[in-house]
Length: 135
Ligand SMILES: Nc1ncnc2c1ncn2[C@@H]1O[C@H](COP(=O)(O)OP(=O)(O)OP(=O)(O)O)[C@@H](O)[C@H]1O
Ligand SMILES: [Mg+2]
Image (cartoon, rainbow, N blue to C red; front, side):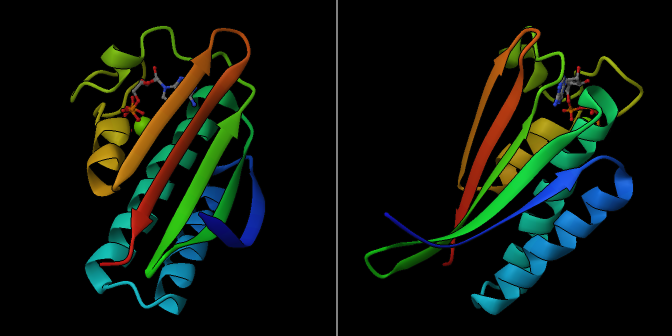
């Protein structure tokens, strides 16, 4: 797998989350993703980066283009140094929230992407790595 492009943004408030989502959509447009997939990518980015603002305060997002044979994809890494998630299986359940949200951000983003992985350590932070291939 070869990464041909990478760009990072710091996430500190909801405006940054919206900018990151727009950035992801623009990259998807440039790579020729369908309108449905453009929206899936920008929505997943918005949910995961909004979680940073809500639960961790600050974090980073890195977007890369990946090429594997004839397949082109987008790889997104969103990380923070916040409190971490104690129970990942629970956090990924529809409707689970420790805040006032609907508890649909993580499971929704997972469904929208082709790959989705969370690594989290209490007191150290959370990293979500998610990707989508152009179909
Ligand atoms: N980056 C993070 N750091 C710490 N905890 C997190 C982080 N992201 C998610 N969580 C925890 O996982 C739970 C589920 O997140 P999810 O995005 O699915 O729902 P929500 O943010 O509570 O509501 P919604 O996204 O529907 O508005 C959150 O309530 C929070 O407890
Ligand atoms: Mg959320």
